[in-house]
Length: 305
Image (cartoon, rainbow, N blue to C red; front, side, top):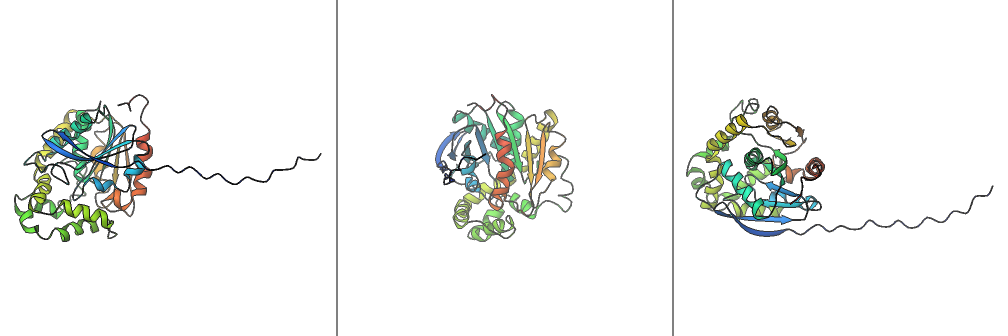
């Protein structure tokens, strides 16, 4: 039997190019401050909370990919970046109220919340207070106050800069005029020597230059005893009920996962190898590989705005 002649293969059709959603900046008033907020994309909301010495641009390597499927909301925390340099309110509970107010102002009835470093405690408290609002929780490279599980990490004492930053008025007086050296130290150690792009480095340096900018940054550390009591009280009275992911790298590792394990109903832990503390800039692809499917797995009906 003769087979019909085969047609020559047609040229492969190139995959359509998907343009990354543009990032816009908005000024939003909430809880007595005006927050500078980067917003991109549409879909289920994802709130990104940065740490020190960062601004919303900590997320610059991942925000466009997340925005292909989500409405990404990335504020400068109270006192940092272009947000109000408030006199007080740097405890995790107040920062959680700031974040809740942002979501309300933007009309979001639910959101996944992602926090790293100083953004982790307010993300944790917001999830505890408003399980109806927080669909999913991702926390990275931080400790949750005095909760058990971090004893190995703290065996030699907390990192040296915690004490330095905590003394009222000291660090900003010593560092004024030397901000570049100090910020560069954290960006280098936080990426295991690899560094960050010049654009991001300059944005961070600008945000942390000047006596008042430094005062606000160190106020987050000075509020840690209050934040620790808030975290301890929350953990004693309620559990985390939403799907939660704890991600560690260097130096915190699995300490945060160990703190969360006894109080979270649905916890997944991951360690990213050969990665510094500043995960979103040091290993953005590895981070996206973890959080993109996790954030996309919302149960039907809970992602609406």
